[in-house]
Image 1 (spheres, rainbow, N blue to C red):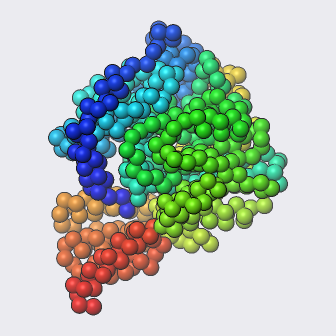
Image 2 (image 1 turned 45 degrees about the vertical axis):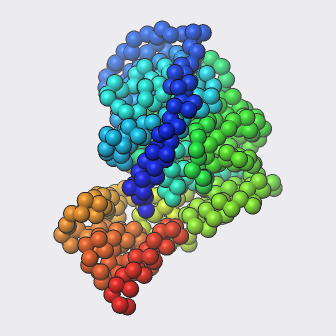
Length: 557
């Protein structure tokens, strides 16, 4: 389980340690402003057609019927930032507020926020040296439309720059709470037409509000290649995307040491690959040039090569994982290349986390299909069961569909086709786009191709889904009561367990409530019941065993 108080303590301890060092090397980063004099700094006024349709010169923002925002932007770096900021200002500002509210939840004290502000400045003191002027200029233009609310976290520009490292910092500092992204690809005789198909779930969760407004961005830059990515307000980096040459990139977090200094955010590395590479060889060359500060798998698919590979990067190592003489490749959250064969952190992560389990589940589902199609790829991404179809509870990180993903996406690179999930989670309609069509006709209002859309998952209309949503509400209620030492009616606890009975966490949370309130036998029974379910990680199991041991000793059992 995520322990926000442990995370807060870790951050504040680091902040206190670095407080005396905060001036060392920080001033240059705080004063850095990108050079934008060579770029266009004048853009037309945004025209609001209605609350879901905006136009700015040749650039547009429209919301489709599935609730996805479609953004088209062209121009030089600073110009793109200004245009994106103007068109998406409400989405951008809402996203900033959601993100800052999560920080305030973790660190509610203003005094501690000041400590955190100094730590963030020190931690990111070298980031500006690792992001090139093009992307800093784009972020700088975007920052002109940031919120003006009082915030302890730097200037709008630096805040925007720092936010691009949030994915990296999040999975490094939270450590045990790695996002559980899953990716796979098939080609050759594993697909109907022999062409490459890629599927991926991006399970980065920063709250329901954060995932509400997804932006499908289509960028026509003055340098490099046209591309699309799935993003959110304020984000110019790439976590999932495809360019006009049919090159695709997605990222999967790896196991990292807690880094002591920020370098190149992985989403910026991904962006550079997408904008400037046409094939796998060029993608590898770009990734090799950049210094990162966390461990990450960059899943690269190529229409030109008609296959996919995984580039595995970390602060101290670099590897490429390929599958010669094969027709499929799978990636979860552990490394597979020879470069990491002796890596102790990676080996431990494979044993203790849910990464290997999801890898095996993807392998199982892919092997069950003779020929992969986009529809079958979506079905795999939506799968909620464990190995051999075992019911492991809804929301379990061992499932491919953890019912929290920011998005799911399927690519057919040769045809320049992409399908993007719509809310809720990956259960809504997967909306189809053709990059050639979008970039040939950017003036169109609405880029989706309804005839190619993949239908909604009927699971969202079931009683099981309603119960899962109820479980999420009850879970938050019970955890709040535990943290605030509040008393609940026992019926709430029973309802929590019955809403998601196959999920170990439902019983664990009930056990935790009983334990904190000295209902020792009830706590023991709840923990023992949780252990009979598919527990997500070894640390989770060890934590439960620790409680059980204490209770047995206390009860004299």
